[in-house]
Image (cartoon, rainbow, N blue to C red; front, side, top):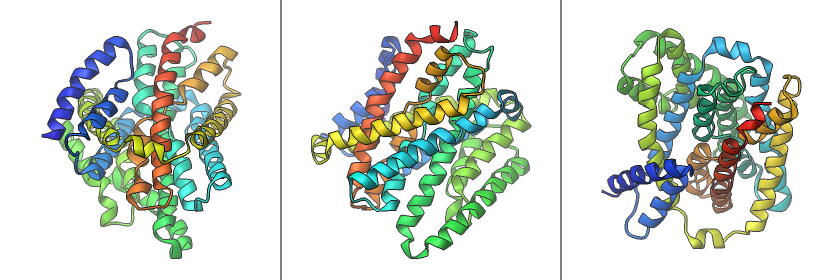
Length: 366
């Protein structure tokens, strides 16, 4: 009943947020925050995992390999360089300013290192529909890179979470990571080619099963979901599937951010040093912008376009909502600090970057 109520209120607030041009995910978090005082939202771990699977499935379905070739090396660099710069900068600051372990600092860094397709992609589609920035393929470049960026950040996050849970087998874990990535990629491709599903519900169910494939096989389950979606997008017309998946994602997004909101309390934030969090976030953002500028420096973009791309590639939301509470659930000493940092990043970055992107589209018209 709590989730039905959350979905109902969330859908209502979504309409209001769209009219006011306010990021709706902040309203979803508010729904969870308020409901937490009256009831509980159970199965949070499962909901976060399902949401992450749907994000990666949508990303995979939206990646067109032939289009990727058109936008060139800038997309390739954007897909991992900014995340690497931000993740390593946050890791270094966390080790310098706290007593976190390397595993905790790494999980914090690469939880923050992912950009949010849920915020970025709708805005880039809006630009495409109005032929803004399309001459230099800016919307396509950002959409494609944002999808790949998540995979890079989540994969490295997984490495550090593996280090945290298998501290006596770190070398073995590091050796297995590339093997699991390759096998996961192959699994997704094989499943897509053999089954060739066309119905959205069947595609979503297979993706969810692949999302748990690492319980039975030595594979990266998230990579398998991504390659499953990419392979389907190359085999068949997935426009209707993408549209249907978008509808499914609306419900998943409400549930995901409601769960995150239900975990927030005044005590949660009061227990942490917000100045420390702001310093870490600031260093991470500045490092990310450096990574973005290096990635696009040879792309022929003017100063206004570079500034727009830099801001458009900053939002935090979906991945942070799915991963920020993982260290806390694992019982790690700094789990609450990592969780609060992720939530703060969502609250600050999403409205500010969305407002900038809408108000400064003129930067792409010069």
